[in-house]
Each structure stands twice: as structure tokens, then as C-alpha cells.
Image (tube, rainbow, N blue to C red):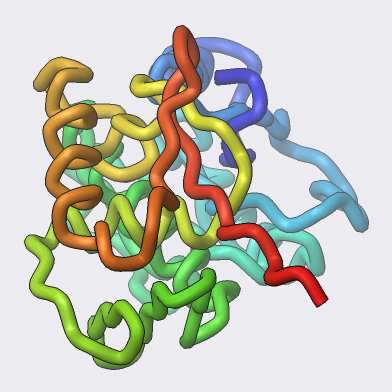
Amino acid sequence: MAGGPVVVIVGLAREPTTELAGVLRRLGYRAEVIVWPASPIRGSAPAPLATIVDLRALGVDAERACRAARADRSLRRAPIIALVPEQEAPRLDLSLGFDDLIVAPYRVTELAARLRLIRWRAEREAAPERIRIGPLALNQATYEVTVYGSPIELTLKEYQLLVFLMRNPARVFTRPELLDHVWGSDYFGGTRTVDVHIRRLRAKTEAAGDLLETVRGVGYRLAAPPEPEG
């Protein structure tokens, strides 16, 4: 997914850093490798979703790279993850300034889950607490969804799917895109689960009108109801 969030890797222009970049791209992220040493590391480019400092590749430069990443004004606004070899983990200096660590050899599913959690937190912090589209309202602080003020009961995945669609009204998403954003790129189920959840959401929000639209041959969108004529 070329348009996915940016994940910066501080490492070397060879294995194992290049292998990690390939894994991130397969998970739908844009991997940006910063070859150490680099000064300044990144300058004023937009903040990435996260920065991974590849301690496996950096060896004796790992400490300096961690501190440089934390000092860089573009990188320090996002979580910094240290990817550390298993034999080095017990001796790792926890004061280096990283926010999380992954022990190598790592599982791709673990890396995907960590990044998905970071992404979810970033989207939640950036999103308004209350979202309203026509008679459909959602309160992210209380997890309450109402239609014309009356609460409706949703499962967790139904709620997460509705939140995503309400944050992006009128935009059409394919089934694989919805599967990636709501279930995660490491979900092994088929796209039919999206159809099932859309159908359930339609049934539970039918009092709000036909807000959940099928775009034939493409996917789904949540469309705001037409404004009443003056």
C-alpha cells in the first residue's frame, strides 16, 4: 500500500535493515530507511507513525543512534522502537529514550500488532471525541452509539468499523482496505467478513436511513443524508 503511514528505520543499507524494510512494505507501510550515521537524521520532514532503531545492524553505534533519533525534531514526535537482538536485551540501557522494544528474532505478527496499536492511538488522539452524521452519533469517550438519541448495541468490530467509516464520510473503501484498517494487515480471514459486518451495521442503524452505501464493483462508504430543503 503505497499510501500507508511512514515508518522510519534507523539502520544500515544492508541486511538485516533492508529485510525489515521489506517486511514493513508488505504490511502496508512506507518504509523510510535512514542510513546511520546521518546528521541531521531527518530534518523537518513530517513526523512518521513510528521510528524503529535497528540495534541488530548498528552494533556499537546503537546508543548514539537512539539518542540522535530522540533528539531529532521530526522523529521525537512519534514513538521510537528499539529492535534489539535477544542476547543483548538483558543488558540494554533503558535510559536511551526509546518508547518500546522488540526482541529479535521477532514474529511479523508481533511487529504488525505493535504498529497497529500505535496507529490506533494516533488516530484516536487526532479524532474528535464526538462524531455526528445526520441522526447517527458516536461518542468515542463512552463508546456509545445512538440513532435519534436512542442507544444501539454493537459488537467491538462493528463499533470499530463504524468509527472508521464515520471518520471518513463519503469516501469509498474497498473490502481489502476496510479489512486492513479495521481488522489489521495480519488478519487471515477473507473479505467476506466485511460484508457480514456491513450487513449487521445496516440492520442496527436502519432508523438513521440508508447511510451505509454499496458502491457496486468497488466497496462501501458512509454517506451523509441530504440536507433538508429550505
